[in-house]
Image 1 (spheres, rainbow, N blue to C red):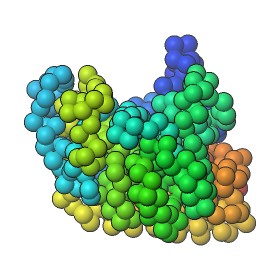
Image 2 (image 1 turned 180 degrees about the horizontal axis):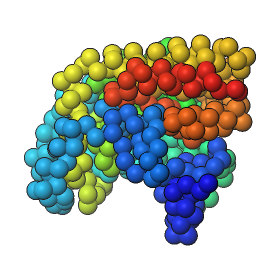
Image 3 (image 1 turned 45 degrees about the vertical axis):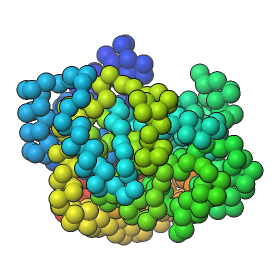
Length: 425
């Protein structure tokens, strides 16, 4: 029997490329028809046919407090009654910036933009302007948005769709992007020693979230910090996912390593479109109007996004126990899934830190994009549709991290584990 989602997907493909406005939503990796959502509350999504799902995507990370948190909704409603956009400065931007600077170690100045992609794109432009160098270093499988420089050996949707060419991107741009393997101490050291004097910045997801959840090896981020210091390279932490999720101060607080620039998105907007980049005053002062590195945006600092973000960050800042509670729920999920899958004789690995987690159907530890790519995608597809049928909504790709929200209840965790137990592999 056709569902409302089936019909909407047919209609969508007539007017939207592939029927979706972001590629992973198309379900190409797992097959089947995308589920069209109608509403959400707490830890649950409700589709166009009224079916409820336990949500482990959480809008790909932003909904750390759960959907429809009353204080966030109230903040958005109150601001919408005043105005939805000015194109002029507001007090909200000031208060939001003050709170971000207070929460994040080493941050002195911050600028708000409209997405994580825009934040990362602006950060590398700033690094190039600050250093006078053109090359950048990134890691295979790390996704920093869809700007030209970042799509060389990117993870996330490109890995999901199997896109290996860089159509539409000038060759010269790709030549300025150097790529190496994450967590390989020798590889990054060799690359930096070869090209360090011409490299403007090194950009890294301190915990990768676009090839599953992949943690840095002990000492690896410290090693990057030392290399960048020695060669005068700007170290950029892409904390679009990890920012305000792993801790109040994000991965910098979690691992005790300070970057020169940090990019944010997702949680910083409380579910509304927003991004930000910030860092040391010495570098941030090069951005216009203080300096000659130009960056602008009509809707930057949009009052609705600022209101939602300020309400969200204030709750996280005032309630530090939230992070321990989130980690506890996620660890219970990991323990339960481990027990369930161990009984089935299926090779698997589970990566988890804080409220980020991913399941990989492979025999080796997942530490970089190469090992992440060894997973059995057929097993993942079967798992995805099994869970979807049972009302558990996982990311429709083996290359994405799952996110746990504060609104997830113990009975939701147990139900999820029970669904894993009934999976036949």
